Length: 114
Length: 113
Image 1 (cartoon, rainbow over the protein chains, first blue to last red):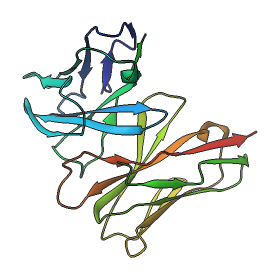
Image 2 (cartoon, each protein chain N blue to C red):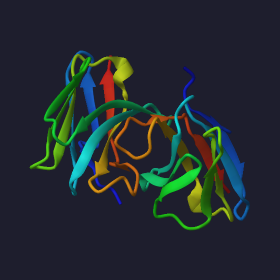
Image 3 (tube, chains in turn orange, blue):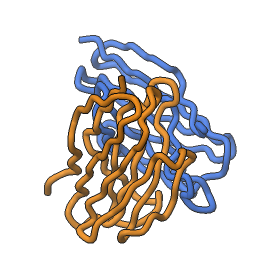
């Protein structure tokens, strides 16, 4: 069974631009969560989607948004990029909603904002 | 906010030795999970232990959970060079995962050949 895939793997953007990251979960998984990882703050939860609905959202500004499609693929968007948005963005898929189940992580998208 | 705190921050041992990492957390949990991350890549799930369990094994891994002390430990026996990675504990807070999993900052483990 194919794992979680994320595209692109690397991205360089300029401050003020916007970016869209994509995540394809494991086949049959309906829950997709997004995390931001930085050296200073570590891994922080962004949001979780299940059956095309956002279930939970972490403590991030409204510039961070996401959506999930009927095939469970998910995208996250960051508008008006700031230097501090440089990070590794990880998505994770799970069979069911919530955090009581094993999360399968993708390789991440490394975003650099200059 | 960081719920889990791993200790030590870094650990270097010889191949074949055992490695022990600890995790402390602040609030009541439904479960605690351990993940491994190799050099800035994706996380790999290792073990999930529920709040009503005290110990769990998976291959060379042994995890304990002490809910009275709000702490967990991960033991890797007979370490190998391939075990070199960062190890994170993640907690699922009671009351639902409204904030997703809460990760600690990790223990960086180096296995010397």
